[in-house]
Length: 171
Image (cartoon, rainbow, N blue to C red; front, side, top):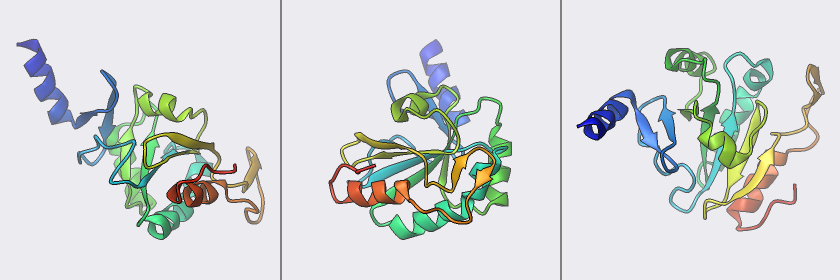
């Protein structure tokens, strides 16, 4: 029957249901069905592209944040570009030394849930799976192509701190 064949094909390709009939593919084929809440932790999605130099520059910071907040937050990289193959994303993860779960969101299920509009952009869901922050990681870039020497505000870190305490972020 067609439904069984479709289910087997979806499992073989590494697709995992997220919301209704929408699908999100986990690059490393791990279970990704608890994407909006996981064991009472805050869930952080960072929307990136392999060809975005700003996304690339944030790789060390995102990995440091993953280590710093790992006891209270789950981090996921989300690749929303339909043109980015799993192979290209895996190469990107290796090149930048990422040790984070990577999701392909070609159906833009997470893009809609997180209200993401640009890369890089972050979204924080509280322990109840409610979106409490979406926006920039920090203010390193005020405009495309114009970076400061160092960020002076840290919106994503502030949102994680607040959400992990059960508070609504001030940002």
